[in-house]
Image (cartoon, rainbow, N blue to C red; front, side, top):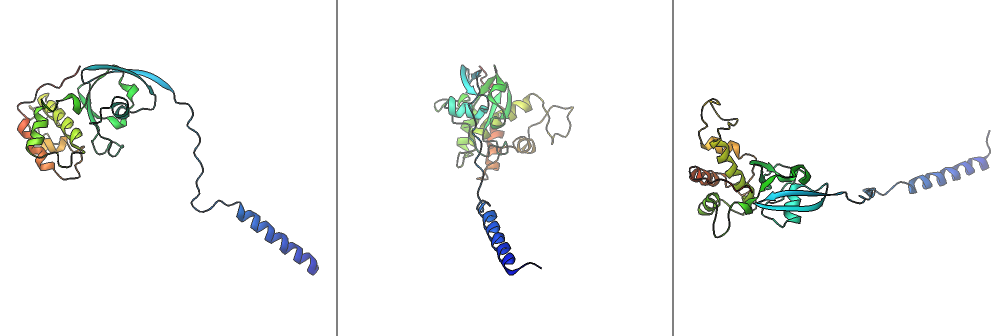
Length: 215
């Protein structure tokens, strides 16, 4: 049978041990500090951007969007969701539209890249740019560069006979329709809800689209 002194000593030790253990628990919400990123690995990439050869040294983790915006100051292409879901960063690479936030710059060595700046200028608008202005298709304007670049690509796809998910007969020439436009531009999101106006602008330009400048 243990003595009362032994019980008191055990209780004291228990309290000390409990307090020590609780002090070691990090406060609620505390987060571990991230490890240092280390020295970035740099590499040279050469591109033809809007008809001009560009060669620069970048971090190998640099996306094409960040190269355009941060290194070349071509800020027309917007960083919206940064997850390839909104289409605000749409550019044309070697004739194909892509989400530039989802691809690394180094993956496009030697490629021809066309951004909204390469389609037209304030004094000489591309017909699609002019149609967006005419029909107020730009609304707040944030998604507009991606919308216009995508719309130009839509007309090129239809002209080339490339079918979409709503094309009824993939063996026949593709006919431009509202359904085709909406389906092909479904990856470009407009928070202002200007989709109907955008369809009108694209339809108006359908027969007068010039070739996209590709270096």
